[in-house]
Image (cartoon, rainbow over all chains, first blue to last red; front, side, top):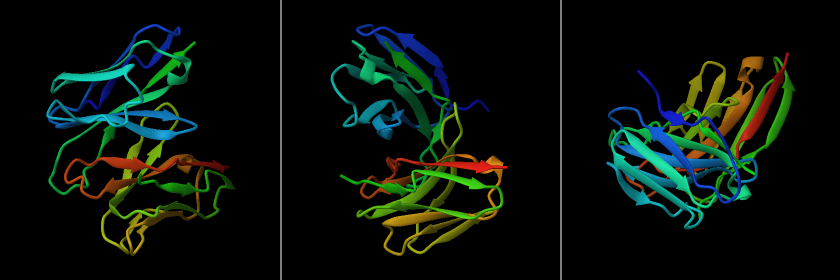
Length: 116
Length: 114
């Protein structure tokens, strides 16, 4: 069974350009999470969806960041315009709700973003 | 704001040594998870503890959840080079119900030298 799929794996862009990161969650999972990981700040939750609906976007750093989930098998994280401080590894994770509140989150391999 | 502090941040040891990683907070968590992350990959769940005082063992790894559910520890016995990686603790937030929203610690980078 395929895990969480992210694309691209690496992205290098110039300041001011639009960047779109993509994620395909595990089939059947009803939650999707977007995280950002840096050396300075560790792993931060940006936004998460339940059944394609955004539930909590309090971690989104500013209006330059937006995320969508048009259907159960696809989500995007967009940065427009990008800035050098956005350079990080962005992870997508998904999980299926069991009702116990201790479900496992399955992470994708991440997208390493470098903004020059 | 709920925070999880991990210590130490970096640990370099020889094969065969024992080590303990700590995860502390002033907040109470509904559950505590430990993840391991290798370079170029996403974190992978090792264990989940949910009851205060709970101890779980996974081969040479022992995980403990504090009685007050504010802290946790990971102990590795006779470390091996294959244990090298980034270890992350993550707390499940009270009131999050079934959302599984997690607060992650900064991580402990472990290097085990042959």
